[in-house]
Length: 143
Image (tube, rainbow, N blue to C red; front, side, top):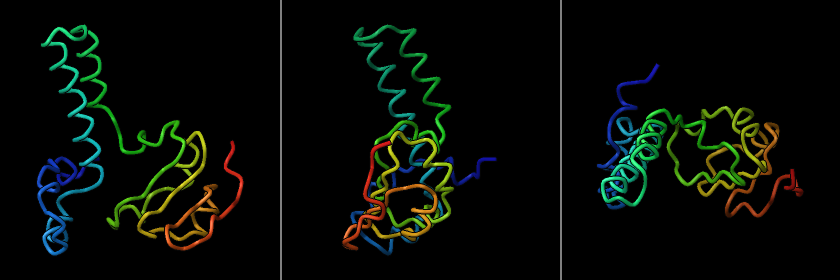
């Protein structure tokens, strides 16, 4: 079930200008899932605009727009070479790391905010690099 806060457009997120207090106040209303859904909708709108400009076929653009409306946050991990955590939003601490790891092409996680527990990421199967921690947990990243 989608929370009503997952449907809020994250546009306001772009305008906090690095203001940590404002970001904290908006945080409960701007989930990472909402950001992902919004970005997918932007991709769909771009495809439709390209069709309007006769750059691509309308049927293809319609298919892209329909698919973009169906994207889930978990699908973002499908077949990627690395997952990068670049936010300190608390909901990222609740990710099902094992499920995400099983979707990636290579199990590399780069945690820019040192949000996650390295040992939990490793137990889930990730090669974990926390920026500033100085250690790459598991040394082989080929899958």
